[in-house]
Length: 130
Image (cartoon, rainbow, N blue to C red; front, side, top):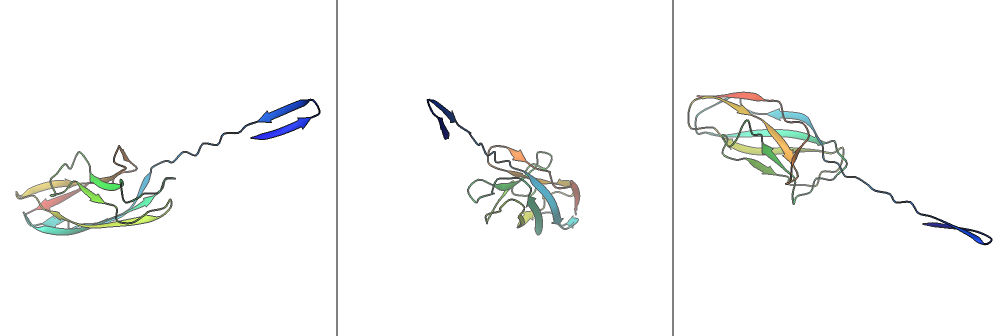
């Protein structure tokens, strides 16, 4: 608030600044085995960039499987293990368990802040389970 005094006239000006934190994520890379043995445990890696203005913290930001994938891979979420500032990147290294039946299964993930999903989804890939 600024106050200007011009003799008997006083002018009071107030400015309100609102900073909006926006959640957004960009895809960088993913590594996964395109073929898995039914029921086997496999290492995967997904790297995303924080392309928003909010900082991803450990308490509420995590990677989740998309609805098209569901719980086929033995887990539906992966916690963020470090703070990720805007323009920073994070690599999620985790294991998935291949479905117990043979076939082709979708593999796709997205970020969430615990309230809603945001950012781009990872490219949809199909993993063959033998």
